[in-house]
Image (cartoon, rainbow, N blue to C red; front, top):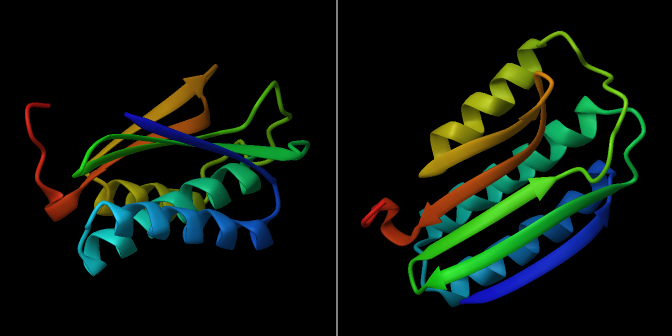
Length: 132
């Protein structure tokens, strides 16, 4: 099992680093172009969702865990307590959640006091879940 962690400034312009890292790891595992794109979209949407959700975060933690040649888990979360900006679910936030759940094989939301503070995303090469 391989693990990679990156801490990025919580700014939308740094999500390109997350997308490139995600694409590189998925490509190394032999994911199809479609699966790579799906995972990049899920990671990017999750990161942007969290960045837009909070007013005082400075860092976004992204942790990749590769368990086999066809499975990658990605955790995206904000460290520490942060002040919520967007308490009401906007259409943009709802769309982001829909997109994340549509392109990933599994999504778990890390919820604290009714607020999403992180995502755990599973993507498998070929989109096939095995023994889950």
